[in-house]
Length: 474
Image (tube, rainbow, N blue to C red):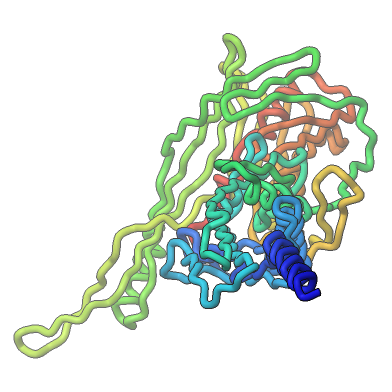
């Protein structure tokens, strides 16, 4: 009887040990953090800095769930409740420290250290033709077995996030790293790559852009749609009759200077006699010639503009040998202040010796327009339309443009909207054409029949870099 009891006890101990040896380890999350670079080359004001999605509670939960699912699939581990810590990187740090020292080792426990570093890429600007790098994520992960201090996983993963070109005519929310749901969904792939058996190397994810939803449908039905294949070197109109322009870039010529002698003299006298500092100003006038080459013909679109420079003046005091005081005015060097177009300046389109069009340009501030953005979407799917948090809004952007002029016997005008993404042309006050695209045309809607020459000239006018001529250094 005693031998039977001993046998049963030994058997119980054996199976208990066997069960214990094969038991699934418990996961302990030692660190789970998301650090982001706040200062990217320049010190950004809070209302211009990029938006960090991971700071939102719902996004934190989604990121945590993505890693929890990946851990479950790879090792059948259950991730305990863990909150993602989100904070900016210190001003004087280039990379966050990745601390993986274990304070207490436990048998049967795997210890997880996971860090996500969002390096960013300066201020975000969306490209119309090429994917735009908007952020780089560097993930570091260590998974340590507390039983024997062995390393189960030690991995660094770099993921570049690119933003796809926006649908023509859309205003991109430049402070966002892509369309928010896309950003969140990206972590499903990121977590899978991080925990896969083989080293994944560097990865790339392409996100849809986040766009302002303006509901700016045209009140007029177009009769046809025109397609373009454009880049910085050429513009190709694909419909029949087709045409193409080579666009080698503008040439600049100084055509005059205004030194404001009367105002500068008066300002200098005020500084000399009162000690109140001031500035002297000079204005240089330029002509920019944009050539559009077509076979043996070259159209020239000539834009006249001015650049303003300013130099600071201060009064200096000198004590003479006899004890008296004398004063003089000292001037600093001239510095660039801004570039602009006066509404009285006349601009032209020429072909050979013929002047095909004359026109004036004026700028309309889009600040009020930006302040009224209330909804956003992915730029194409109406089911993605959602309320736009005010803190996500663009705080800067291009002013809209208005053109008015004469083309042959007809008057014409152009009005832009959506921060120059949409350019609508009118002939004799009737809407005729809308060109969509940022900087260069991507497509156009035709509302009335136009001559081929009119389409060509409206294409040229739609491709000019209007923001360049409306720039302030301050």
